Image 1 (cartoon, rainbow, N blue to C red):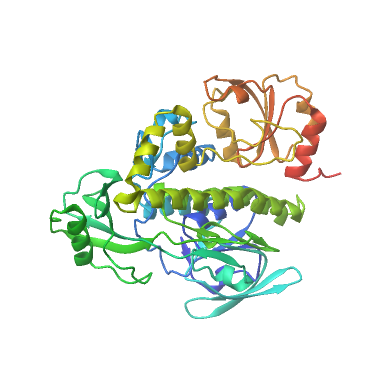
Image 2 (cartoon, rainbow, N blue to C red):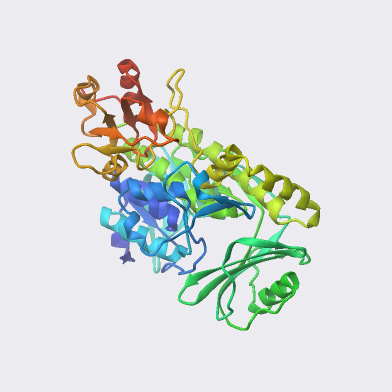
Length: 500
């Protein structure tokens, strides 16, 4: 549902979320799931309906599973593996039982997330544009421009989910480190061209071509023509230009067909100095941009939103101190920095001429070493993310994320990660008589106690061997073991001091 009237815009909100792409929708839903009351706005009168990002990494699918919404993404085309710079890596080298999915247009992703957010009480108000934001003692005074009028909103917190040209980022004057583009690709959604299914791309002497079906006879084509000069970002792309680039790179004609949508993108990158400035926060492309190698952009942005959502909901409702929000930058900034490094490396290996081919061949041979394959496959899949939980001397699984299919609920038989769909943190006990069960009573409104047994595999031995686990609302293990003093400290750190 889209709400236009000014009556739908309250004069005060705990959190104003600017931008209703996948990132803003995920954040709005997460805030609402955890008891927040966000106002989500978008400047477009309706979703643009463009296909854009086409799939999900394993980590994002795991998040959808933990929130109980994976089944809403109907028709996912799961693929058996991943790629690094076009070099195939078998899915057996992933530290997860799940596999990535592609051929799922971003427009459908937005439909699913928008419906979920609205069910939770966070519908999108559009078309409402953030015109200005002025700091106050309690947050920001924001001026929103609607179809026929303006509205002033006092917001305790403002979150920019408004992309690479973020109004929020510019309004707070956040410094940003930019790397200029060196190579550019043309992108088109075509119909009737009979393109091969080559989602990992094929490198040619004159460039690179990637193509894959999207369903309904639509095909995605991406062409990198080394001979073409750099065009200004945002310059319209024509079907004739895509056709000429394809034929120059492949050396064969592209069949005539219809062009439904065309665009261009480059390997330019950017990273803000900080994801937080007081009561303003930046999420997704407003904080980091990069070459979309391996489809990581939208996925990392959704994961940013999941990291921030429960923290901001807890702080805005007074359950936790404002300092908890500092952990958003502390945990996600290194992920963004690694993302730029990873995608830049792939771009150099895949979008350069024959001079780089010897390096590609060396990396291809290194992928025969299992440890190398796991390192690169987990990296592009978001499975290698580890947070410092502030527990002295802690080792895995503390800091890692609780993956699916490791523990099953003894009472229900379900996968324990599905208990996270409620938005609460979890205390996972292999013995219901553990002293930890009574220790967590002061936080009982924020935490669910689950009696579980492990399913052991070769990659989850650390998790399966832990008798007790405290799992944050975002699925990351914050404490494991039998030191209950450390457990109390961890509960206070992440859930706030219990009420008297």
